[in-house]
Amino acid sequence: MILSHREQGEKHIRLHHTKLLHVNYLAAKMRGNSIVSCKTMIDTHAHMNEIGKIEQTIQRAKGVGVNRIVAVGMDIDSNRATLSLARQFPEIIYPAIGYHPWSITLEGIEDNLTFIEKNLSSCIALGEVGLDYKTRMKKNIQWEVFFRILLIVKNSGRPVIVHSRFSHKRTHQMVREAGVEKAVFHWYSGPLDILDNIIEDGYFISATPALAYSLPHQTAIKRAPLERILIETDAPVEYQGKVSEPADLVITLREVSRLKGLEPDEVKRITTANAKKFFTI
Ligand SMILES: [Zn+2]
Image (cartoon, rainbow, N blue to C red; front, top):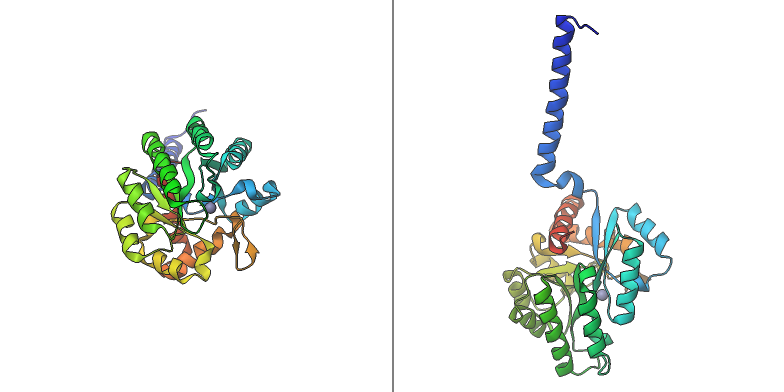
């Protein structure tokens, strides 16, 4: 086909215009990843092995924009189940394995730690682990287990998801002394001076739907910079009598937005970027 000079000129302008549009789009995308990440959210802590009707649960989560879920384990059985769910839903469920202070038994320690070491390579993080002074297991046993887990964390270079209940000072101290680089103090509701130290050390805290009613949790989330906050549900934990699921991440988002006085889209964009960076996903 032979084009007239004018037609050739018009074609050139059209091509040039299309190229420019594309360049502008790429530049905008590179500027903040915001175009992509503001549409989706990551539930950074859920016990997926304890949730029934998993497919419907995932569909409801996706329906409100929760496209990724970090599933945590507490002992060998739940760790196994978590790993198996992650294989079943590889684009959505990202596994973490752990040994929760509620799950510790004297006879179970060696097997649980061995399981974690053996399966760590299939996980994005270690958790849920930590210290809980309201549980029956003696403090010195919890310290020993947590210390050994933190060594595994340190050697693996992976992030750790930390449970601390009436044990905030010690938990933070142990994480720091182990030289762990990435830690999230999940559902933080502890003293503010320790929170300040956690933030100074470069660690994160996470927010749950309990923000709707828990004053200590609200106080902590108000104080922490948004750049150090991850959002989660801890599903299927019951909040005010209602069993939660990952779709309830919208409640956490709403409450963080309210406390920070920011638009939900802004909170979504920043916390999603935080989670991607923290877990390298
Ligand atoms: Zn949990």
